Amino acid sequence: MVWTIDYTDTAKKQLHKLDKQTACRIVDFMDTRIAILDNPQQTDKALTGSLGDFWRYRIGDYRVICDIQDGALRVLVVQVGNRRKIY
Image (cartoon, rainbow, N blue to C red):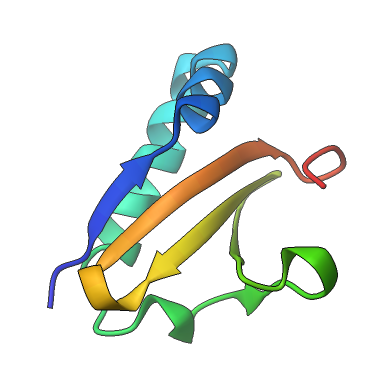
C-alpha cells in the first residue's frame, strides 16, 4: 500500500527555511520510509491533548507533525521544526 505525502503551505515554508541537506533528509524520510508502510501509525507516536489528532515523526533533531488520513491514504505534513521549538 502506498500513501501519498502532502505538505501544507506552512510546512513548505518551514522546509524552505531549513538548510538544504536537512530539508532533503526530511522529505526523503517521508517518501522512502513512511509512504511505503501499510500503516504509518506503526512508527513513532500519536500526540496527546489539543494535538491529539496528529502524529509525530522524529528525524534527527527535527520533528514532523502529520495528520494521517486513513480514508484517503494520505499523510498531510502540518509542521516541520526543531524538536525544541515545534510545539
